[in-house]
Image (tube, rainbow, N blue to C red; front, side, top):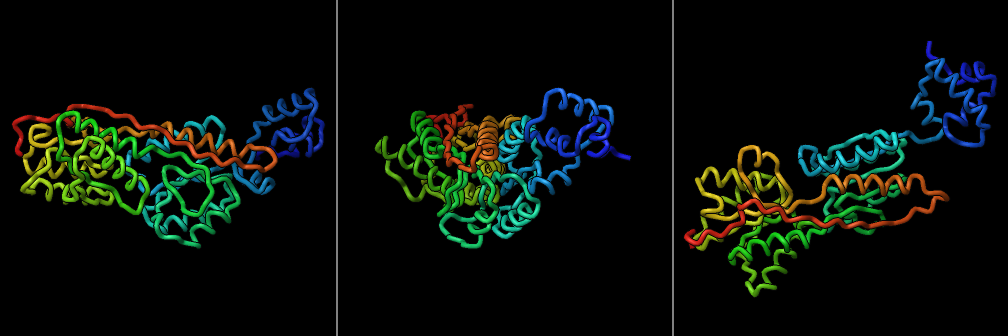
Length: 344
């Protein structure tokens, strides 16, 4: 039979309350008494019940993580960073995948509320241009720290970690321009999201700075899914006045883009240059060296978890609002090159 707190108290010759103080690290206990209790715990091979602890503290030793695409390597690396810091603080993680749907996200929030978790890290899926009272009220009613991960919730006041998407898109477009490209197509993400709008802004800023007209015919709106980029790339390759470069604004869309390019037997960068946003390890494995803007994903996860922990352990309940923006890096692998004899 498993040892109980009463067994520890009896073995150490102390009260149950004193044992509880040591187990929960709360209240003063003499060092000599603490040593007796720790020795008894070791002798009895006592394992505290997480369920019992949650009942007494009204909180589990768990945090919730909600992402829109668990199969996207971008979120996989963020989760890795979150997990690293959670392990350092002996915190458990409950992970939810929403498939980019509002209903699944609301369901995840309600389940986590029932689980009495300590805090949440979330990449919101709900479009920012559509206010939803139920969604916002659900988030606020949790009454626990919430940290946003590269996604905004309008009319809210939550801490968060974000990427400077304007700078990333600006740097990627500048790299193409410096190679000699002036006809640069862009495949955006879902324009309901701020990252997609910011990336389009960065692209336009680079063109304007270099006195290159913003050609609406070269602006294509995707939805972060590889199917949309596949279809759009086919359109681009069929254009009479075809651009010399394509800037694809997500790692999943770059897969669709490269599939279309492969099917059309188009050479990169010989026939058309390619720039991506966020890395795709799968392309490296098959020898497709595509230049990209690298978001600091693991660092984002670590930073978000550290923000959450700061609020969890902050005394007096005075939670500090922090918005941290991390800078992406340009990684050039040759696909951005301008080949002089390519089709005009």
